Length: 573
Image (tube, rainbow, N blue to C red; front, top):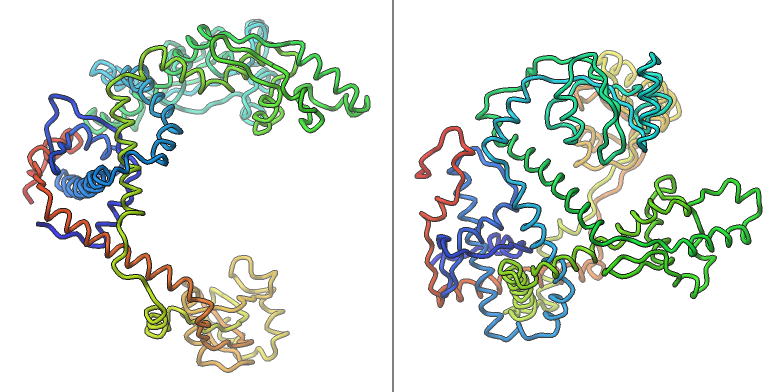
């Protein structure tokens, strides 16, 4: 049976989550004491490792390592069930606090992620549209009326760039006058790039809307895209970008439907009361300069804080206290005015979005969906494994005074403050000049004055070349020579960082052993950790000796996506 090293055990403890569940047609990659670990569960965790590999062989090695880690975790889970850790109140509290997170994940996977997978047609079309790169300018405004007004000015001959400077809310417009430079397909939001793709150079498109506002676009130029390589080399990147775009589009569409199904009613009287109270609190001069979206929450009493600002159908209400508190994290210029009902409704919806999503997930029945229940169960088991690991496997040896003192005495270098030397330095590119300075400089005052004028070490002229107390780890070349140099003496040049350093030694501090009582606690913690890890390693090996474990390496090999590798190696190395 394989024995497990300390390093492997640490890796096993690093798993915080691997979410997934088996399907009936899944291959089993490992059986651990009767538990079947399927390919889908394994891949669900492995995808979160987020690594790339030069060959399929290297990926297989990593997959085998991860599989060993998951086996150890499953052993902990099985032991936790034996000790009835699954019935602990602490576990129930953790599950209750995290149920909504998994419910929303089930909603996301079913409605958003499932519909974001690119087809072969999507990928080919994306590749075709990478043939050219486009240079465009745009004017971004907040509403349709402004967009139509600006577009009318353009049609009457007014300068596009000047109008971008005057009207665009794009933060860069004052600098670039709307010029976006060259970009390729996939770099912009869907609405924007779809319009640009249909245009000819010199053409100006009528206003259209995106999530950022209303755009007026001028296509300046198109050029062949020199970065478009072969389809095979770009395929994975294209799939990723299509998935990302489809996900964003699906989310926006889903949220738009939610806002229709969960309409917000704003209590205008609450905001009117707030505006009136501002007049009572602030002098007219202060009030005139105060944004109409700002209010000091401390000026409200308990009853005022409980006033309702908005009601979401079937999803609850938002109080004035909740509204003002949560908006403190939003810059003032991005908050809606208290009399802008539509924008206030948008913010109230956003404040309740997570609650709305949870309600919607339950309404759609995801709380009884198989994948959700499997995720929740696995999350519970992982927390059980944590309790088992931390609280139910005692250390075989508890560090005592003799062990702690012995470690201190036998590892004195670990508790010794290193030797330090205080130096002033002049760093120069010219070796002859450095030698001359070292030979002609006499006093520290004179050395510091020359350092202020000459040293090339960044940031040290204003400090007269003061490197303060240096250690060998920071300046090894200077330190080694300074150790041989007396206090009050100049030495060098010595080569460091490709230049020539001369220095003046001001002071030296000898190595100093730290007091035992000052480091006793840290030694005890270190030894305690090491003993726990050894005990855990022994527990794992004993558990493995008494558990039937079968690994299907063929299924593990088959779990690798060989399309990722231009040259598919044999996996037999």
